[in-house]
Amino acid sequence: MADHELPDCDTPAAVLAFAQEQRAVVQRGEVLILEAALVWAAMHPEETVADTTPTPGLVFGELAVPLAGEGTPLVAEFAPMEFGAALGMSTDAARGLVGDALELAHRLPRIFKRVRAGEVPAWKGRRIAQLTTTLPLDGAEFVDRQLAATVDKIGWAAIGRLVDRARVMFDPEGAEKDRREAADGRRFDIHAREATHDGTVHVEGVLDLADALDLDTAIRHGAEELAALGSPESLDVRRSMAAGELARRQLTFDLRAEAGGDAASVIKPRQVVIHVHLSAAAISRDEAGIAHVEETRSIVSTEQVRGWCRGDAQVVIKPVIDLEAHHHTDAYAIPDKLTEQTRLAQPVCAFPWCERPARRCDTDHVTAHGTGGPTCSCNLAPLCRRHHRAKTHTGWTYDKTDAATYLWRSPHGLHLVKDHGATHLVAAHPPEE
Image 1 (tube, rainbow, N blue to C red):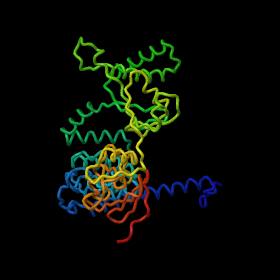
Image 2: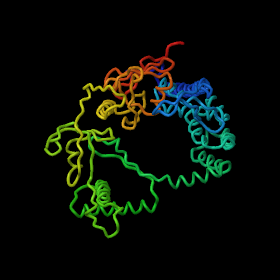
Image 3: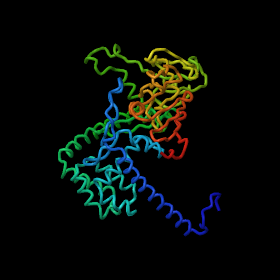
Image 4: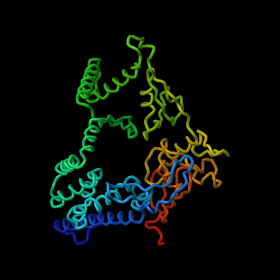
C-alpha cells in the first residue's frame, strides 16, 4: 500500500466508496460555509456601520454595500475581510462568497433548498447565483422557479439561455445595455506581469471579426517576410516575431502627424524601463545577470534585456536601492526614495492575501504619523485603498517586523502574518470572546 494508507481500503470497491464518502463530507462542508457566511452577514448589517468623519486623503469611512442582487440586505463593507482571512482567501473572494450566499438565500430560495439538502453541489448553486445577481427581483424569482426541479440535471448552456430570457422579459433596458456592452467587450490583453524567465508572455483578445482577419493577414505576411529573409524559426515562432515587428513599425510613426508630413521628424524611440539588479555595464558587455522588469514580477536574463534594447532603443536604468538601508524624515510627506524602497521591498499590498501591485497602492504609516509614527523605512508599507481604509476605520491593526513581514490582527482576534507576499494564520482559531 502507499505511505498514506487509507482505512479499510483493501479492495478497489472500498477505495471508491471511501472517495465518495469524503466527497460528500467536502460538499456538506461547503454548504455549511455558505450558512456561516449568511450568519456573518447578519452580524454585520447596515445598522452596524458607524457614521465617521472623513479622513483627509481617504475621503470616507466604512459604508454599507450590496453584495448580491436587488432585495438582499446591505452588509458592512469591511466585514468580508475578516471572514475571508479566517478561510485563507482574498477580500474579493470573500465578498463573492458572502454575496453568493445572500443571493441564494434571499433570491433563489428553491435552488438553495436543494443545495442545503445535498441534492445540488454548492459550487453549482454559487455559479447560478453569480449569473442572477444583476437580474431584477422578479427575474431572479423566474429563474429560481424554472430551475428548481431540474437544476441538478440541466447544463450550463441551457442555464445561460434561461437567464438571458429572464433578462429580456423582466429587464429589457438592461438586456439592451448588455447587448451594447457585448459589442464594446472587445479586448486585447498582454499578460506582461506573468512573463517567464525567458522573456515570453501570454497574449489573448476578443476582436471584431474584420479586425481579427486584418491582424491575421498582417502577421501572416510578416511571418512570410521573415522566412524569405532566411529565418530558420518555425511558423509559430515567426508569427510571434511578426507581431512584435508589427508593433515596432506602428511605434515608429506618430499617427497624429499631419498627412504628407516628414515621418522621420516624428520617430518615437522605443523605451524600456527596468530595475537593474546587476551592474549598468552588463547592459553593454557580455556579462551574466538578471533584471526585474518594471510593473511585472518577471526576472529576466541580461541577454534578454540586451535583446530588447538593441537598435534605436532608449533605455532608462534605475539604480539598485538598498532595501536594508534605513531612511528617515521628520515630515509627514513621504520622499520618493522612501516610497520606492517600500514598493521594492514589498511589491504587493501588505494586507493578507491581497495581490494588488504596490505601485497602485498608498504608502501607509504603519503606526499613524499623528500618534507619533515616524516617516521612515521601518514604519511604511504599501496598502491598497480598500485595505488602507479598513485599517484606518475598523479594528484591523498591524506591525511591521522587518522590511517585508507584517503581523496583522483582525477585529475579532485573528492573527496573520504576511511574509514576502505569502500569508498564513498564526493561530488556527481566534480566541473566545
